[in-house]
Amino acid sequence: MKKLVVAAAAVALLCVSIMAGQNAKPPASSKAAIARGKYLVENVGMCGDCHTPRNEKGEFIKEQWLTGAPFPFKPIAPMPVWAEKSVNIAGLPGWDKDAAVKFMMTGIAYNGLPARPPMPEYRFNRTDSEAVVAYLRSLSPAK
Image (tube, rainbow, N blue to C red; front, side, top):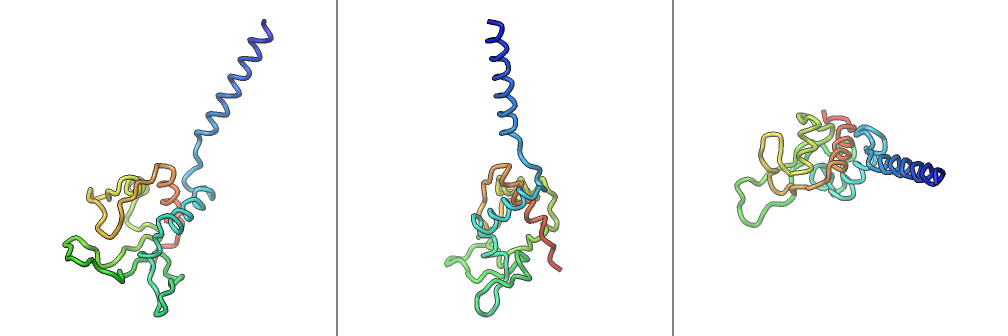
Protein backbone atom coordinates (compact mmCIF):
# COMPACT_ATOMS: atom_id res chain seq x y z
CA MET A 1 0.00 0.00 0.00
CA LYS A 2 2.86 2.37 0.87
CA LYS A 3 4.42 1.77 -2.58
CA LEU A 4 1.10 2.57 -4.25
CA VAL A 5 0.83 5.92 -2.41
CA VAL A 6 4.43 6.83 -3.31
CA ALA A 7 3.83 5.87 -6.96
CA ALA A 8 0.60 7.90 -7.10
CA ALA A 9 2.37 10.91 -5.59
CA ALA A 10 5.19 10.60 -8.13
CA VAL A 11 2.71 10.41 -11.02
CA ALA A 12 0.81 13.42 -9.67
CA LEU A 13 4.04 15.42 -9.34
CA LEU A 14 5.03 14.46 -12.88
CA CYS A 15 1.62 15.49 -14.25
CA VAL A 16 1.77 18.85 -12.47
CA SER A 17 5.23 19.59 -13.83
CA ILE A 18 4.18 18.61 -17.37
CA MET A 19 1.06 20.76 -17.19
CA ALA A 20 3.02 23.72 -15.85
CA GLY A 21 5.43 23.40 -18.75
CA GLN A 22 2.56 23.42 -21.24
CA ASN A 23 1.21 26.68 -19.85
CA ALA A 24 4.59 28.39 -19.96
CA LYS A 25 4.94 30.73 -22.88
CA PRO A 26 8.16 31.80 -24.53
CA PRO A 27 9.42 35.30 -23.79
CA ALA A 28 8.16 37.82 -26.35
CA SER A 29 11.69 38.50 -27.59
CA SER A 30 12.66 34.87 -28.17
CA LYS A 31 13.51 33.61 -31.62
CA ALA A 32 10.46 31.33 -31.57
CA ALA A 33 8.12 34.22 -30.74
CA ILE A 34 9.66 36.40 -33.47
CA ALA A 35 9.32 33.56 -36.00
CA ARG A 36 5.68 33.07 -34.95
CA GLY A 37 5.08 36.81 -35.27
CA LYS A 38 6.65 36.87 -38.73
CA TYR A 39 4.35 34.04 -39.82
CA LEU A 40 1.30 35.87 -38.45
CA VAL A 41 2.28 39.20 -40.03
CA GLU A 42 3.20 37.77 -43.43
CA ASN A 43 0.78 34.86 -43.83
CA VAL A 44 -2.25 35.54 -41.62
CA GLY A 45 -2.59 39.31 -41.27
CA MET A 46 -1.00 39.90 -44.68
CA CYS A 47 0.23 43.23 -43.29
CA GLY A 48 2.63 43.79 -46.18
CA ASP A 49 -0.25 44.13 -48.64
CA CYS A 50 -1.14 47.55 -47.22
CA HIS A 51 1.92 48.58 -45.19
CA THR A 52 4.61 48.03 -47.86
CA PRO A 53 5.15 50.28 -50.89
CA ARG A 54 5.20 48.69 -54.34
CA ASN A 55 7.23 49.44 -57.45
CA GLU A 56 5.83 50.21 -60.90
CA LYS A 57 5.40 46.46 -61.54
CA GLY A 58 3.28 46.06 -58.39
CA GLU A 59 6.03 44.16 -56.55
CA PHE A 60 6.87 44.89 -52.92
CA ILE A 61 9.86 47.15 -52.39
CA LYS A 62 11.66 44.85 -49.94
CA GLU A 63 13.94 47.61 -48.66
CA GLN A 64 10.80 49.43 -47.44
CA TRP A 65 9.09 46.40 -45.89
CA LEU A 66 6.20 47.53 -43.63
CA THR A 67 7.20 51.20 -43.74
CA GLY A 68 3.75 52.44 -44.81
CA ALA A 69 2.30 53.21 -48.22
CA PRO A 70 -0.61 54.96 -49.94
CA PHE A 71 -3.60 52.69 -50.48
CA PRO A 72 -4.15 51.75 -54.13
CA PHE A 73 -7.91 51.54 -53.51
CA LYS A 74 -10.68 53.68 -52.06
CA PRO A 75 -14.19 52.97 -50.80
CA ILE A 76 -17.05 53.21 -53.30
CA ALA A 77 -19.03 55.49 -50.99
CA PRO A 78 -17.27 58.33 -49.15
CA MET A 79 -16.13 57.44 -45.63
CA PRO A 80 -15.02 60.32 -43.41
CA VAL A 81 -12.58 58.22 -41.34
CA TRP A 82 -10.99 56.32 -44.25
CA ALA A 83 -7.18 56.37 -44.06
CA GLU A 84 -5.48 57.50 -47.27
CA LYS A 85 -2.28 55.62 -46.47
CA SER A 86 -1.01 52.99 -44.08
CA VAL A 87 1.38 53.82 -41.29
CA ASN A 88 4.93 52.65 -40.73
CA ILE A 89 4.87 49.56 -38.51
CA ALA A 90 8.52 48.48 -38.97
CA GLY A 91 10.00 48.79 -35.48
CA LEU A 92 6.62 50.02 -34.13
CA PRO A 93 7.69 53.67 -33.73
CA GLY A 94 5.57 55.55 -31.20
CA TRP A 95 4.11 52.39 -29.65
CA ASP A 96 5.05 50.88 -26.32
CA LYS A 97 4.81 47.11 -26.06
CA ASP A 98 1.69 46.96 -23.86
CA ALA A 99 -0.30 49.35 -26.07
CA ALA A 100 0.71 47.45 -29.21
CA VAL A 101 -0.28 44.10 -27.67
CA LYS A 102 -3.63 45.58 -26.59
CA PHE A 103 -4.19 46.91 -30.11
CA MET A 104 -3.62 43.46 -31.65
CA MET A 105 -6.00 41.91 -29.10
CA THR A 106 -8.81 44.49 -29.17
CA GLY A 107 -8.39 46.74 -32.19
CA ILE A 108 -8.22 49.77 -29.87
CA ALA A 109 -5.17 52.02 -30.26
CA TYR A 110 -3.19 53.79 -27.54
CA ASN A 111 -5.38 56.88 -28.06
CA GLY A 112 -8.52 54.88 -27.17
CA LEU A 113 -9.84 54.86 -30.74
CA PRO A 114 -10.34 51.90 -33.07
CA ALA A 115 -8.21 51.51 -36.17
CA ARG A 116 -9.32 53.58 -39.15
CA PRO A 117 -10.66 51.63 -42.13
CA PRO A 118 -9.50 49.74 -44.07
CA MET A 119 -7.45 48.39 -41.13
CA PRO A 120 -9.30 45.41 -39.67
CA GLU A 121 -9.72 45.16 -35.92
CA TYR A 122 -7.72 42.04 -35.17
CA ARG A 123 -8.56 39.85 -32.20
CA PHE A 124 -5.38 37.87 -31.67
CA ASN A 125 -4.91 36.05 -28.37
CA ARG A 126 -2.24 37.39 -25.99
CA THR A 127 0.50 34.96 -27.07
CA ASP A 128 0.00 35.71 -30.76
CA SER A 129 -0.29 39.46 -30.10
CA GLU A 130 3.01 39.39 -28.21
CA ALA A 131 4.59 37.42 -31.05
CA VAL A 132 3.39 39.95 -33.66
CA VAL A 133 4.71 42.82 -31.55
CA ALA A 134 8.05 41.04 -31.01
CA TYR A 135 8.44 40.54 -34.77
CA LEU A 136 7.50 44.11 -35.68
CA ARG A 137 9.81 45.51 -33.00
CA SER A 138 12.64 43.32 -34.33
CA LEU A 139 12.51 45.14 -37.68
CA SER A 140 14.64 48.19 -38.32
CA PRO A 141 12.56 51.35 -38.11
CA ALA A 142 12.08 53.23 -41.38
CA LYS A 143 14.31 56.20 -42.01
